[in-house]
Length: 214
Ligand code: DC
Image (cartoon, rainbow, N blue to C red; front, side, top):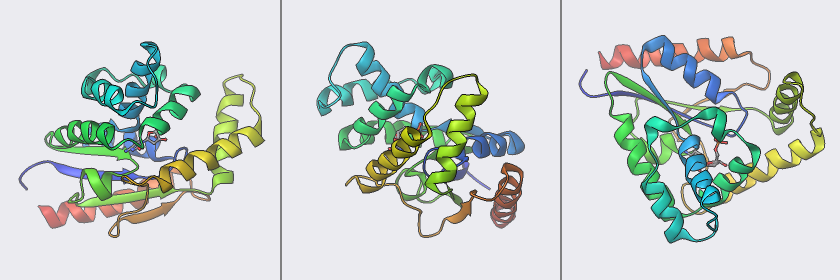
């Protein structure tokens, strides 16, 4: 096998793709990039600098300065940052800048796992393994609700459910790189599947592709 072995994982928020991606990266000793964090870091840089979220030139400049090595999931996970990220993610110049950095990352040896919305379709269309991880909006909203409650927080299920649907709508209907499964992606619906079962299913697709590439 020459070059990096790339595993592309796409799907909506709270479908379980983050947990699954980290687990796969650990299993195979591959580098992992949560590409959502690159959009979040760009949005946070704009918010911190007091800059508008609707100026594409300014947002592109911030995107070009994002350091992949410094992405901190805890700091970037705030809800308002996710909302802002979804707004700037519609801008083609922002996407171009971040996709370029993501493609460079994908070449790391011996292999990489990238998760996001457009990895199998746009960022790494030649990836030998593509997974599209999804779950119903109700299940995803319930997971998010349970997560907040288990951390001792307060949450309003209806508000979270509306938010999940609004975010899906924005991600699926933007003109540039809308979220959708690649034609050759394996679909994993985790609505009624444990993370362990999803991992085992993913592992069998990956092992088969690795032996084809050997
Ligand atoms: O997965 P996340 O919630 O961290 O992503 C935040 C936003 O970033 C999401 O609403 C859409 C955008 N995004 C994207 O457009 N393309 C990606 N590859 C990853 C995220």
